Structure formats: C-alpha cells, structure tokens
Image 1 (cartoon, rainbow, N blue to C red):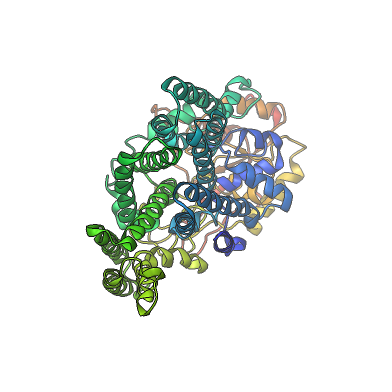
Image 2: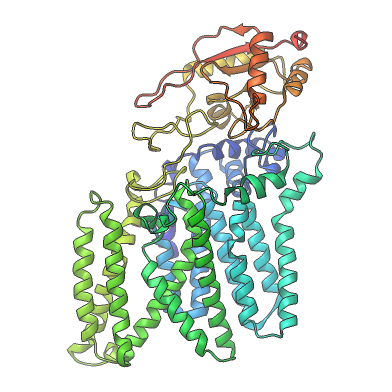
Length: 620
C-alpha cells in the first residue's frame, strides 16, 4: 500500500507546479538562512508570510539540496504522504487488527483530496502527517497510561502548529478526552499527564511566535497579516479567531455538498456506522488493556471527526485541501466499522446479518448522489455503483454463516460478496483518486483536488496579489503565471543590476511579477511593499526614504494601473503613500516594456513604470 501511495503521489511530480505565493517564500528561504528561520516572503527577510511557514522548511531544504524545481518542492510532500499511510496502518492495526489497518491505509491512499494534496507543494500535507504521528503516540500512551508517548503526541501537535497553526489544535480535545476517559490510571495521574503534555504542546506550538516576539523588530521581518507587527495577532487573530464565522456566505452544510464531499466525504455513511458501533462497543468494554485501547481509539477518532467537521462548517474553505484534516478520522472509523460488520455478518447472528448490506446500500446511494454532480466525468460510474450494490447486497444475504472457510460451492459466496460490495462502496473514491494519473484531473499546487472541477469554493483572490494566479474566463484557477520571465522583464532586471551600485535591494515592487516570479526564478533581493493583501505596513514611508537615503535601495517598480484603495482604517496604505512619493521624487527610467499579455486571461498584465531614486533626492 505504501508503494501504491508513493506511485500515486509522485506520478506527476515533474509537472506538479509551483504554489502561488508559497513558492516565492520557498525560494527566498533557499537564499537566506534568516529568511528560512523566519519563513520570510522575500530573500532579504523584510516580511514574513501571512502565516507560520513551517510547512516550507522541508521544501526549502529539498530545494537547497536538489535545486529550485517544482519536483524538489513536491518531493517532501510525497514522503509525508507515504509516512502518513504507514502510520495510518500502524495505528489502526494496533487498534482493530491487520485487516482494518490495511483497509484504513488503502482508504487514506485513495481518498481524492489526499491523492492530490500529497502530490503538490502546500501546507496541509505536513499537518496531516504530524497529526497522525500524534495519534500514534497517543495510542501508545493510552494503552498503559504512560507519560512519555503522551508528551511526544504534544510535540507532534506542536510541529503541526508550525504547518497550519490553530488547525493543528482541532484534535487536542480528542486527545485530551480520549486519554482522560480511557487511560488505565487514577484521575490525578491522568490529569497530571495531560497538563505536562499540554505544556509541552503549547511550548512547541508557540516557539516561532515567541521567537518573533523576543527578537527585536528591527532585526526580524515584519509579521504579515497584521497592523501591529505582532506574531500573536497574525496567528490568533488574522489566521485564528478572526476566521470564525468567515464562512457565513457559504452553506453550513458545505461538507455534504458535492464540491467538498467529492474530495473528502465519500465515506460518510461507513464512518457513521463505525462511530455508532464504537459507541455500542465502548458501553460494553471492560477494564482490561484491550478495552482501554479500543475505547481510547473510538473516542479519539469520533471527537476528531465531529470537532473538525464542526469547525470546517463555520469557516470559509477557499482551498479544498483544508478538508484533508478530516480524512484520517473518517478513514479510521470506516475501516473499523466495516471490518467489524463483516465479522458480525460472517458469524450470522440474528439481525446483525442485515447491518453490512444496509451500509453497502447507504454507501452506494451516497456515492450516486455525489457523483451525480459531475455527470460529465466517468459516465459509467453511477451504473457500476448501482449494479454492484444490488448484486452485492443479494450476495451478502446469500452468504452462509462460516462459509468463508467452508467446503463446496458455497465457499465462493463470501469472497464474491465482499468483492462486489467493495466495488459498490469504493469504486467512486478510487476512480476520483486514480484520476490524478491524468494531469487534467490531478489538481494544482493552489487547490489540491482530484477529479474534475465542479461545484465548490472559488477562491476570491485576484491576479494582482503577490505570487497568486490569474483568473481564467470562468473565474476558475486554470491559468498560472509562467515561472519564466519575459524578455522585457529580463531586460528590466538586467538594467537594474547594471545600475544598482551594490544596493542591498535590487528594487522595490508594490505588486506584480517583480515580487513573485522574479524572486522564484532569480532569487534576487526584491523589496516587497506591503504583504499578501497590501495592507501590512512592512515598510513605512519614513523607512523607505531612509533606505533610499542610505543607498540601500535605488530603484522602485510601480504599478501604474493600480487603484489606490484605502486601508481598513480608511486612510491610504503605506504602499500607496510610498508610490505617491516615488512618483514625485524619483524620475522615471525608460528601459522598454517589461510586461505583456497572456492569451486567455481576462485582464491583461499591469502596466508598470521603473523609477530611479538617488540618495540625494531622499529628502524631496
């Protein structure tokens, strides 16, 4: 299964593409260890990403080792995917046995969002791996009430925090409730273990935030996404509690709509059956070690699934890879439930023989509902699922108790029923996942999703944001800025390098190609003005003038088509003030056109002007 995962995730590795915005930071982190430490957007470490960029550390190290290529950035994601599959197998095997472990590993491998996510550079792959490793250590802790593995679970959650911040904490209630309810120790011991592990988790989680807090502001980069240059505001405000309720314009049931369900939700019916079965089992479990492990597993995966689904339902989901954190819990519950139901069905105990056929029917009906939203993709899928469900249910009902190992013609009924029932339940997600072998359906570094584009979230960004995509005619993410500079852009950069006089910064750029693909292709120290949304005052006008006066900055590239919009406080942004000062104090330099239009793009690339700011004119 690990080999299949490696093949699937690495199939399109040479064409996986660069993640808009994040790839700029990854290149910057290969140019400067300071940028690496602070996960800065630019090589000179002027401003950070608008989030903790710990997920980029493996990518940047890979790019330092192999050179800056899209496959070098994707390689760590493939490794994280294979590790996740192996850990998924180990956790579920120790919980429910080898059959359930193998099924869980297969379902994780062949869930559409993970099949695409682990094959592209992005933040969610590292998060999923860290959370699964935390679950693995939790399982070892809850079996014997041991502190050390519980502490390691906290460490892995903290590392997951470096990848996706507070999203890593979504499983903390599951870990705490599960350990508190199932660990075989006294209340005081359990509470002490949880407090110790929680302290370690918080310390590891906040390590980057504390680094940004303790390092003087004139030595470290500006914290993007904030107005006060505070990492606390970035993590817990801009990226944290500030996003609660951000999904008000989206349906609260979006996880059940085809757009997201086709990526993460094919297993909802079987996961619910596993959760219900777990509740019944936990109510009957005794105090032996096996009972602690089983109860702890059901509490972990149940709380993980319900808590994550609740949060995803109330926040905006601009990237479908957000839903990947829900997948491990769905996979574990589904595998446990289906294996348990098969054992009950084979034993032939009264009405329990009808439970597995009922789940097969529910899975098939749900698959038809989700697939129906993509009628143009794999047209054969719905008839196959429906036919397999009908045949599978009949075959299951014909299976005699114990016939799986019996003699005679009846011994074939159980394997055939199992095979056909599996087709009914898993044909749809497997088809979606294997579609990544076709580059048309492999997803992208911006939106990791397997299969066809259909109903779902459309990211609300524009081509003017630093390093982001260009919107196509349908408002879809189907055209990316080329990572190759145009001849005009190269001519402009060559001119600046020849006349830069050894300045610290090559030039400043308020938006556009110079602060995105110029960095990804050359690694040159471009000074970005503003952050992801251009509202962060990373370089105030006074600081900009000082850079010019000291000879650290000689050129400024301005977007002449940009409309100066006020910031959230109604006042002009620092970027707008700097642009106004540059136009008045720095003469324009004629070096020929630097931009052009890309075919098929709604809006042409912006027209820009290059200005030379001599130190003598800094006081203008």
